[in-house]
Image (cartoon, rainbow, N blue to C red):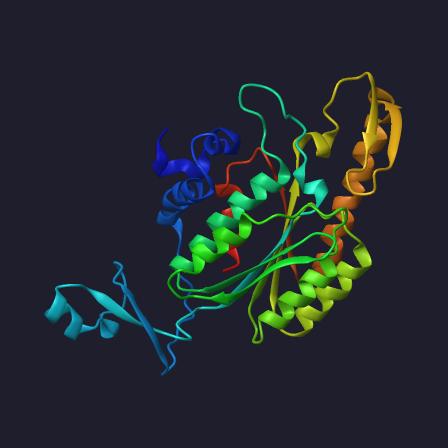
Length: 301
């Protein structure tokens, strides 16, 4: 595999080659050449710490005393050395732990496994731009909260948080988005990554509040291809809601057309809701290379 273009590789095949951290680094290395820094810059007067020099850093902030004394190039990093403050809000509810193609030599990733690798790559890219990044994980309650930071070691904290447990029976997105609003005290970015099997009303209330506070909102709607098109066999099946446990028997061929129409309507409704408040929305299929949603996310950055 050409790891320089890992952002264009089938996500399940890529995930089979390494763990979360390795895959995220491969994806970022493949994506980084097309990444442009935000024109918004600015440093506060409050010094925070040193970090290793990276090509393209402003030489005004190079610490020449350390370079002369220790032959080591580092730059001064400041508390507000960020283009923006971003919080990723990740759905880890039981419905996210589903894949429409669990068998085969390379099983398709579950929605959650895909989302976790996407979030790991997304946060690494933001941190490489010296943006402050935080993370909230939720299911039937808020499971994890990591405040936005741009300091050294933040990505390790985020990776550790992604590895935590979570699989509640419901998705309470409204509470998680409200927590994001409290974390990002000045206008910033909130990125919701979810299969959106959530209550529409509470999401609308939260999005309205975030936009009213001046935050940019991006929504990545994670969908399994089988979930989108009901691309299963034509025989009888029992359809089970993984969160409520409700089960409905049906013949796939009899319900496929109505199912697809219902999904199309739901996606259109979500798109319309987010557009109403100026939030950006995109569907993300779990068989799409990670570079596809990353390009969408960074087109607004």
